[in-house]
Length: 376
Image 1 (cartoon, rainbow, N blue to C red):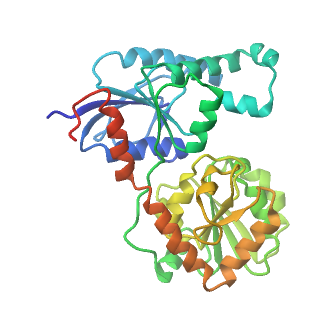
Image 2: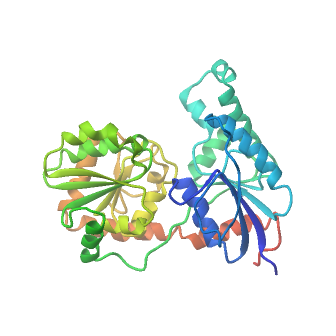
Image 3: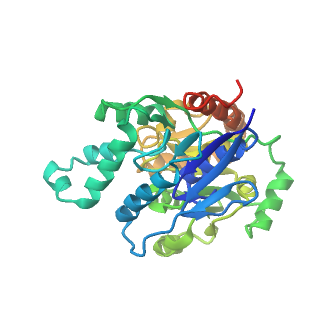
């Protein structure tokens, strides 16, 4: 049987672009054995021998909503012929399968209480809402939500939602946990002190992911600490004054975007993710897969928090402003001999429920609704 011809439509096909972008690349890579994959995108940094790439030019003006309309219009023409299934990760009008990995525009505006008059006077908002309605409520489309919360929230706001499934992202599970020697070596390779408590922070949007709260909590700890921040460092200067107030035994290092995240997780004693808004943060799954204890906010700030058990597979903060709770959690992680292995063990068990093989097979079941080419 010939391979299924799959088109993936996303503005940026890159593992270092963020959670949604990483989801598209990793899932596509897992499908290479059964699918012939063509990526239609504006950004692309993957091996050309693995994926056929059709580039989409950007508009010469820096207006995001106009670029989104342009991207939707042009890609609709590019996928008309030659594909068995079109899988979109973007807010566009077309595509057989639509992956929804963030809160919808409809839900965000309702949550903010924005008036109908203000919405109708904004071409930008009208464009996004129109695209989203066409994307999620076209009967021939199948929506894939990465969390039950986002599905239920969207269903409540958009009762005409087309057929939908909930498939959380997958994660690669390393063969074993890193040894203390490997942890020290990873820190040295990254330019960090090898024997100091190392708190990892992963994300491009430092404000949204809670770096300010983390630095405040670190300032309360009675022992030496280094924070390793992995993500786009363009906003690092905004935290220089706050970092300067830390005592000499505490430091914050902006590591930038790294290609070897396995080394980054190996270097961590724990991952802090005091996010203000997240649907299903992959960084938590990745850390738990590497048996790195995690501390994060609970629902509704982090919807994955509703699936976690406090002090069993994670330490949960009541809110992103719970600085005392974050500091206490970090203190316990470093000083309690029993807590770290407990969190690492049960965190791994949690991550194992979300392997890429499981996610891939669930997507194939949906693809078969549009093409019978995939074997059962």
